[in-house]
Image 1 (cartoon, rainbow, N blue to C red):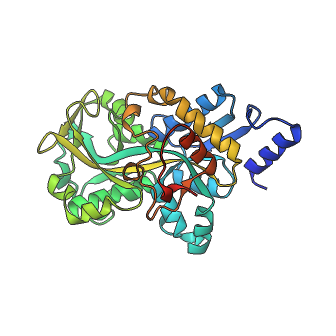
Image 2 (tube, rainbow, N blue to C red):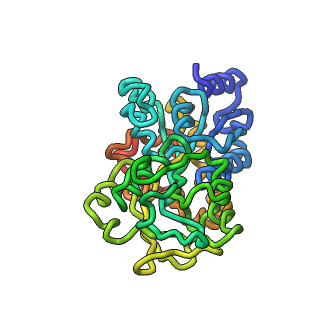
Image 3 (cartoon, rainbow, N blue to C red):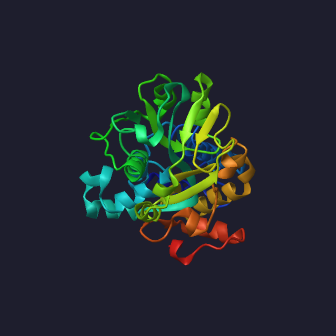
Length: 347
């Protein structure tokens, strides 16, 4: 029996009504606390407790590749999930290759979504003092491109490939460090430059910029508009992001762009649970998110910009090749709140 099912059975045995889940203890995994997924999961724990829905024990600093599998296997109740990972899991590909396609597909079928958001937008950055020459300087450079495995590393490598045609380990030397050591890795000069997910403004760069000005290099417009880039932006969990560059990333940062616009590749995903989660719990968690939106947007200056709770598939990345759909309880909460969910994203 999964953890969620066991908890639900305990609730039923105690005769607790479905409207009160204060005694339910759930576990959640997410990335660094300063990241968007870190903030969303921590905020969910806050609003769920305030709404007397659940007590959520959150473990931060996790590699989400593992977290997604843990939810699918019933080891963790909630996790932040880039939708690319759900696609890779369903195909037994990338970091899930050892599972095989059949086992991966079975695990992916056990995942469901509560709500969505944009994790970050990938771009190239370096300390201005290093005089890094932008995308043309990647050839032969040492690039910090994320944790040892997972969606972030795949995205970072893909972005460099799109812009420069170079591969990690051949055209440049990629180094991988877990998110908990990301700021230290940026500031200690281990890498010449960094290709990481960023937000507007960005918490990770904000910490690193305290040690010196950081330059962010926009994706060149010809590379952004190329056929390969347009195809990639339609790939699972991907979205194109274009925004005015002035003041975009926060204090002590500058953007290099040919036209005062920053271009990058965005990563979309959301909070996932196991499909076996009791519908009333999933409904209550999603309702707590919707009703507590001000808590989420108030957690940091970047939070109002990350498409929290969008339901348009153009922004959510759901449907198509993405195997996950909303949990039935989440569907009820969204529709009760007056939102229209696309049929392709419903179970």
